[in-house]
Length: 131
Image 1 (spheres, rainbow, N blue to C red):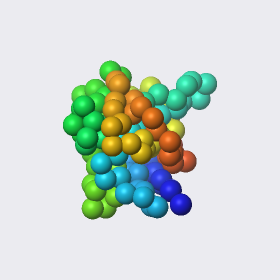
Image 2: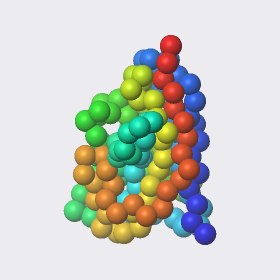
Image 3: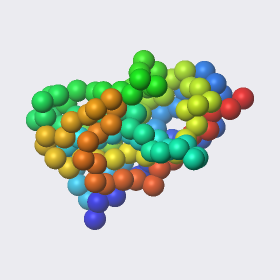
Image 4: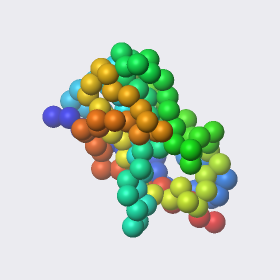
């Protein structure tokens, strides 16, 4: 059974940092594409950071939405089967529920931080940025 579990959310002050984790079970991230998404109340879910599949045309590169470029960093630890999102210089508009998604294809690619073809999702972890 495929399962993704996010953790690391919480309350942060503007300008602060948080590190989110997404641990997988039931499959291996391996060479698949993976991404972080967020959804704020009343808004659609948006892809913000992703890692394309190793065999895709993007060769496993990272990719970010303009709204987080330069502030957030996505990384993956294949041995721990975990994906991370390092978030710095947080802003109140970063407040949202953050979840990870996996595109189980060796050719999965990213568009502006959005991993195309995600089929597995976690429940998410809430991030609130407020003073």
